[in-house]
Image 1 (cartoon, one colour):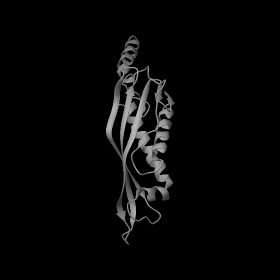
Image 2 (spheres, rainbow, N blue to C red; image 1 turned 120 degrees about the vertical axis):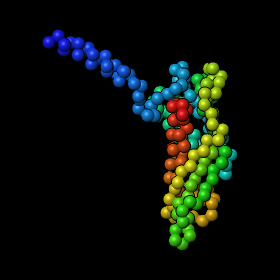
Image 3 (cartoon, rainbow, N blue to C red; image 1 turned 90 degrees about the horizontal axis):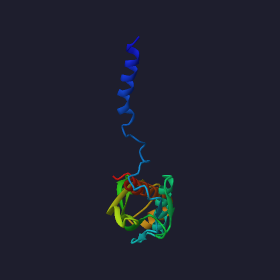
Image 4 (cartoon, rainbow, N blue to C red; image 1 turned 180 degrees about the horizontal axis):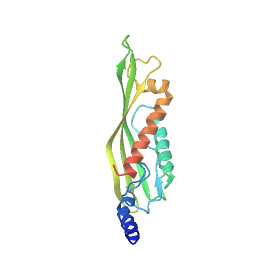
Length: 179
């Protein structure tokens, strides 16, 4: 009868390391300083010939930050704790699969961007990637000839949305999860 209290205490002490192991849900962590509550995300700069891509990507990045639930996001640099700036450097469009008739049936769309996340209070860069590359594969349902990215994106608006969403998720995860 006296062994039971000892076993209960021993069992309780042995469970302590397990309960504080540090695991958390992926995508919900943040390695940013606690004082960063408001993040400015001005419109990304577009150095490509793809019309309006900077607006779509900037909106998706803002939405992804807001979706994390911890930050207020503003469209400018003033009155914020940190600022996330981006410059879309290139977008390339390359066929990766062909039909029996030698028509492209799958394309790789690659976006390269320069991204910087700056802590304005400490005046230092917390995260940057001068050549962040993001590639997505897309199946083509209509006949597309050549490698003009504007023609493809004009035919498949969903491709732009998927590219912008996945790129935004990658950027925000890299910043908040310190990968």
